Length: 378
Figure 1 (cartoon, one colour):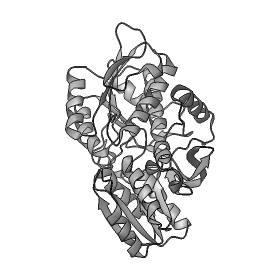
Figure 2: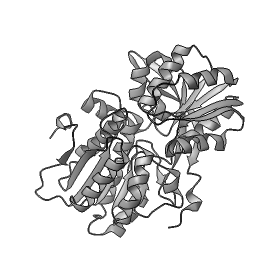
Figure 3: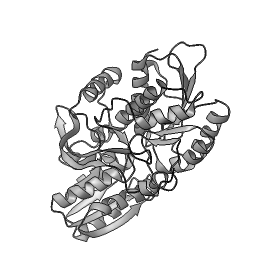
Figure 4: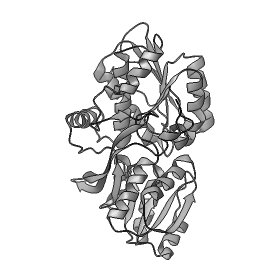
């Protein structure tokens, strides 16, 4: 099997030729609609790590959630009850994670998030079988707030979609940002027309704009912001400046500062090898989401070296907690609520030849855990 031969539709993928797989992994992610690029990159990063491992005892079942909570719930139930999966992963959107993860873990199945990190699951809703391999939702936004202080901004206009990750985004920014707010608003999830919001920004007297609009929402906003002629500096998390968004937005994103726990130029051996392998396999630079899918797969693989989740779930859980794998981020460890403790970086959008990408410019927060770990009782 080659990576290029994998179908984009729902599929069951035997990662090698074993007649009976000892570990079954269910991946529910977004493969269609405006957020498809995020799920495709998570899937492709995950598959790259699995192919590199060459295991013959893993079956991966991939399904498209269509970015719909009811679809995701139905798929999860089927994977657990009919497909007998041991591990689940893949969800991009926090509202889908909130609909799926509590039920999955209640049924004794492990869930490893390669993206969504809602505050509810980091705090009182934490669970021994739930691990987040990306970040807690607030983290990158907290770093943006810290950067705004260092840049001397004192009157930010902030906006995000009205769903759990958007609410966490603005809470995270405000947690570290020390200035005043020129405005604060929630947009519709999936919104594509931002004329009204841009008009409010223009009239607000803001000296900076912080926004969280992932996927197609970010593309629409950045294009319209560029067309508006506004020259108020923009700050955002990496979600709005990932590799796919940058190619769609182009020059309107140049020079924008954003925050991330990963970057393609992060200087460590594992990351350099990942970026090269991903480009060779897929013909494109990896995004933040691809790196998270890759790390999630490698964490699972490291734990499987210790125990099978079906045979010894307690030993498998402890192996996940140990996080004994080589991350594209370099240093990686879990906090007490199974969310990462890691550095969050400042990046700048640059152009290299015909490609728009990000370049590291510094560290915003060192060894950052999250604000909700103390609420987790497990």
